[in-house]
Image (tube, rainbow, N blue to C red):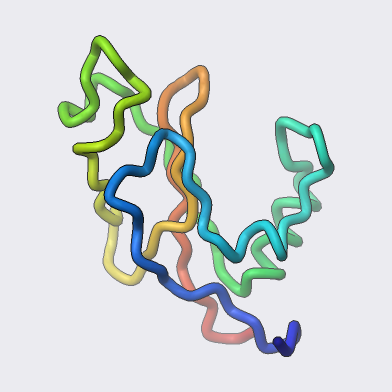
Length: 111
């Protein structure tokens, strides 16, 4: 694969996001240090550059997602997130102490 021309592409989203799903190509291009909980500003910018996208970080509240049962917040089997605007595709969905987080990717025109 030519790293200079790489751009992450949409993939089929699993039927059940299982409260922790990442696009399969992220691991190969990731920038976070092993064991780190958060990206530094530089790592976040480099990840977006590596994937040739802008990542829109979207935090959700469980009370706003009726498809996720209140009694089992890890059951995401009925939740199918929809892009907040046209032209975005999902590259990550995971749970945090503050609720679900989604990463939406917007392809960059100029790579």
